[in-house]
Amino acid sequence: MQPVVSSELPQQAPPPIPGPPTPTTGVQQPPRRTGAWLALGALVVLGLLATTIVLATRKRDHAATPPVAKHVDTPIADAIAIDAAAVDAVVPVDAAPADAPAETHATKPDTKARAAELNKLIAEAEAAKQAHNLVRWVMKADAALQLDPRSVKARFLLADGLIASGDLDRGCKYLRELGRNPMARARASQAGCPAD
Image 1 (tube, rainbow, N blue to C red):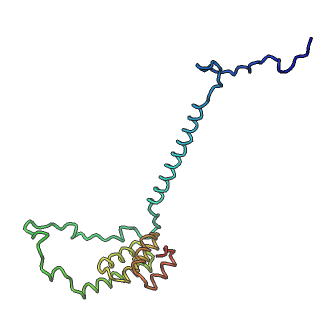
Image 2: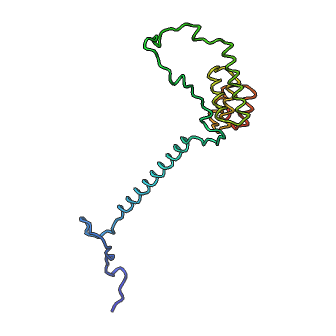
Image 3: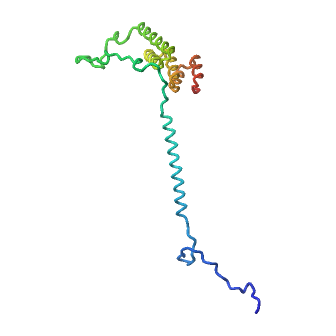
């Protein structure tokens, strides 16, 4: 027998690959796993979306949570005085309409009486500060500020009371409204208020 030259060897087809045959060639192709990859990709996208939603709602809930109030020694009922005459007041049927101009001397209180009331409210707020009665302190300082919105002392007392009660945002807001007042700036830096 003669030795066979490699060029004379019969050509053998590669072994068939398992899988469905294609309609044009008849050769079997390996099974594709594109469906599994698509499902895995969809799960990853849904997981990222769920994580983003959870993190977004946690930030919103944390920002919306009000600060916790500190314990006050006196009950709130003692700090709130209700004027029974104002609650039981009945408007007469023949009363003048609300938009009718009233007499000027009745609508403008005497400036001396107003100043005396302001000084009284500020003194009560300072007494409540000394007694560490936060509710009364803030309530009296706020009433003084409502009586005279230009009162620096009332605004400072209110800001100080709010900061002491844990409401740093509102307390710092009132201190910023005092502008370049050195006492307000010192208290703001002591309380850790954000810079202007």
